[in-house]
Image 1 (cartoon, rainbow, N blue to C red):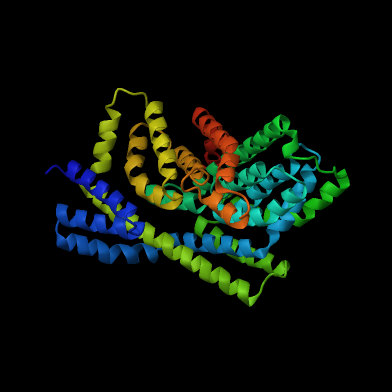
Image 2 (cartoon, rainbow, N blue to C red; image 1 turned 30 degrees about the vertical axis):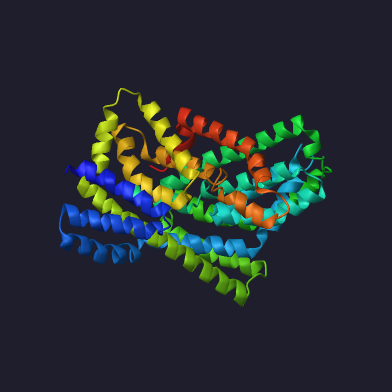
Length: 433
């Protein structure tokens, strides 16, 4: 039987296994192992099972994953989310929907240190939601802002999703980090514009907050300096070539612990909780990553990605139409899958197609992460929505989903701008040489 057809059957079986409830890492490893045995022999399959888990878990370069995860966990437990939110609110006070805009700004800053969308959404929900209730904000606007703002956590560097994409495609993680910065800022601005439009249409959704004096706004920034310093040291160090991403992640962990000590949040309970949580998250990531690498080996020897790239390249369609189709597939998959397994499962298939069409891999990585973010706020998965629902249990899930719809449109506008103007993503990486 033709290897291409066998590979397609293998992918169908994989999706059936995943939808039946099998953990995705084990599902990919099983299909990869069986595929290697079928195409080559049993010895090759068992060699892959024996070598790959150690090869990737013991790799120095892969230490960036647990270290950035630990950095995010420490930041999450340092408690500076409340100070960050209060500072940004004072700076924006007086603008229409200033509390909602402050939530977006705080999400962007917190996500830059935390690197996790779910942690960003959970932190900002516990901090911002009570304030917006206090000022009688419409809960559809409030919850939609928090759920959508949380997605900035995986676009603004450092980002675990960028790390995984870089590993799978052998692209520079440092350049991917830099490529995500301006699109992240653009998305934050678009969210604020969306809030402004909504408040103009529905003034009763966001009663005006009192203005603050210029001096008070400047003083409010004092509480944000640890975040700025840590971000500049970690991301600026990568950009300037002082650190590799792995070294920067270690420096980031040290910096996050120093912030925790400075804020007097360093307790035995917080320390142990951050280690345990990062250990569980790292274990989950590596199980999926190793499974993806085993599956990637099978895809390589089956030549499915190359055949698919050749087939797509011969279609009578312009490259942008093919790119648009791939992005639509990602948006659809985001409705039914979590972001991390989606990246690891689809990148080996779509990446050769993108290279064949001559698109920049760094630019495509930003587009992928951007559309993956959309899955965090779209039904039925909508992980950020359910995190908000868990904290604000008096607000119906359907109401939160209605609240994110205007921001979903902002996401689509952002993707269109990134496709139309690739330099938004590629300008900073181009300066790195």
